[in-house]
Image: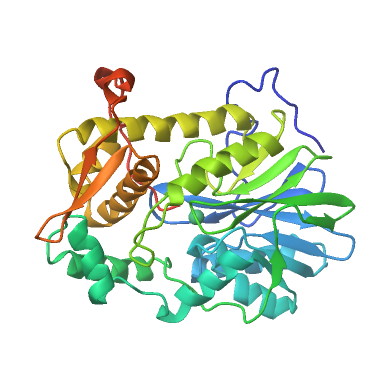
Length: 376
Ligand SMILES: [Zn+2]
C-alpha cells in the first residue's frame, strides 16, 4: 500500500478528497490506518490513526468523551481489528477531542497510555474540574487587564456549560502513563517512529515521524488549512506560547523533509509540509506587524481582535481570539516591539516602541483574514 507522491512539494496537495466512512479504517501507508471520528461544529471530524503491530494495535488520539464516539469505537473493535487487541494508546496532546476516550480504551484493553509529561499532567490537572481558573480573582484580573466587560466571566461560565454538553469537557484521566520525549523512538510493526515535540498550541505536543515511510502524524501541531489556536489563558497570564509555536515551526523545518506525507488531526492528509510551515510563520509575523501598527496609538487587548479576525465573534470565539491576541502581544513584548502600560483602572495598554516600525510597516498590505478562531 502506498500513496503516489505529487510531482512537486512546493504547494499543498491532498491525495484523498474524502474521509473514510464512519467506523472503517483506510490504510494510508503500510501498516498505518486512518479513522475519522465525528465532532460537532465547523470542525466536523477528528482524524485518528491506528498502527498495526505484530501482536496488536496502537491507537493515536482517541476522539471526544461522548456516546457517539464510544459507539464508533465499538464498531471498530468488533469489525476492523482482525481479532487483535489494542496494545498501546498514544495521545498527541491533552485537548478533549484527543484524550476523550483514552481512559475507556486503556481500561478495556489494560494497555498503557503514552503522552509527554507536560501534556499528561496538564490533562490530569484540568480533568475533574481541577484546573478551572476562569472563576475567582485570577480570571477576573486577567479579563479586566484585557479590557473585557465586568460580566464577561458570567458569559464565559454559560458558554462552558453549553460546551460540556457537546462532549468538549475534560474527561477523567488515566491514572498512570508512559512518558514520551522529543527524539525518542518507538518501534511499531517493524517501523521506527520518532517522537517530535512541538509547543504553543499545547504544552508539549507529540508528533510521530517515520523516515522509512516518509510519514508524519502531526496531531494539531501542523494542520493544512486551520491555524491552530495559540492562546494565553488566565492559568498562566504571562505565558509566551507564540514564541514556542514559532520555535516549533523552525524545529519541524529542521527535522521533517519536504517529501513527507502529513497525517493531521483535522482537515485532510496532505503533502507540502514545508510550504505549510512557512505559511504559518508568515501568517503570525504578518499579524504581529499589523498589531504593532495598530499600537502606534496605545491599544487594549480587546480592541486588537479585529486586527486578527475580520469576522464578528460570539462570546466563545471571543475568548479564543482574546487569548490569541494576547499571545501575539506577548511575543512582541519579548521582542521589545511593544510596551505594556497599566492604567489606574487595571487595564493594560500596549504601545509600539520599535523605531524601525515605519520602515517595516506596510499598512495596506495585511488585511485581517476572513476566518474565525478555531478550537483546535
Ligand atoms: Zn488541540
